[in-house]
Length: 429
Image 1 (cartoon, one colour):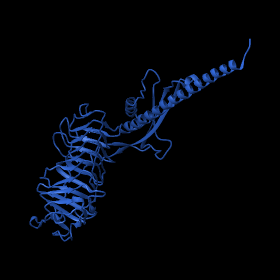
Image 2 (cartoon, one colour):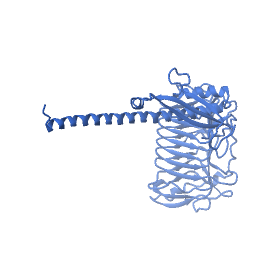
Image 3 (cartoon, one colour):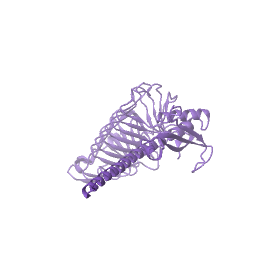
Image 4 (cartoon, rainbow, N blue to C red):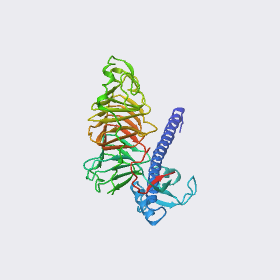
């Protein structure tokens, strides 16, 4: 038989095609297995985190702790009772890292994960995936968000909004079955969320891919509602309250100062001024807030959207008291940065609304507010909406709180509005 060069060339081409096809198939198969393993590893870490927290809540390396850890691991896809490839949850005292004593509980979660293609190469049909976490128990949860509405919805999160109570908890005084609602891709993160209500935690109030993080301890039926003592009303004379300085500086782009010691204001007792209303940033003006106590009597404290910068300048060492129907409003695109006083009666307090004043405090439409101080509005709603981002470096007291349309709020426990004194576990590793 004659073998010419064309025949040999054709055979070589076929062999190369088969080789390359096999190589590419193996490469793609390996990639699929690796992607599956990475996903399994993330799930294992979530299971370990949840197991460590659950065990710490139930007394650590005990029978109750083991049961709680296994229950949480199962919710994260690591079932210790599965008939095929069961998971293993091992509790103990940490033997590595910075927390090697009996005050901490370590959880190691592992599970054989089936492979799709690796078995064809090395005859391994499963690979062991494991993760480790350490948690501490016995941590109390200071309240940094106190919602005093006795009935109805005290807390509402919706439409991709995010509420983070960083290192602290949320207490809602409502006794209603809809006391808290977290819906439509919203996220709630806190050490604790405690309610007077005993029956809000159900699928009708947490729905639409909404999330309450697994590290948030939910306490229903709180015996003592939060009701912190309000700061005293500042002394002022309503007859000496002046008009908004903006009425005088109405031209576009005006530059002026407000507050104690300014020409358009009457300084009353000490460092107190009183305005019938106060506009900041209107007509693209540049307004500097001098340190002091600001009483807003009857009108609004209004931060306007200002092109290319903050709606206010200064704003260090300020305290606002809203009374006689006054309200706070932060507009679309407004950038607000304020810091409370650091000494005296109103140290650490940013805004206080008269307890008889029910007007909503509104932060809306893409505004960006940073308040380094507490907000006290016990009979009013706080509404944050339309992509607004707010950081409250201090506690919040309100009748109710709502976040909507991609807005976000972070609150921290500069002062404590009332500790629920429940043991709360915290991840340490």
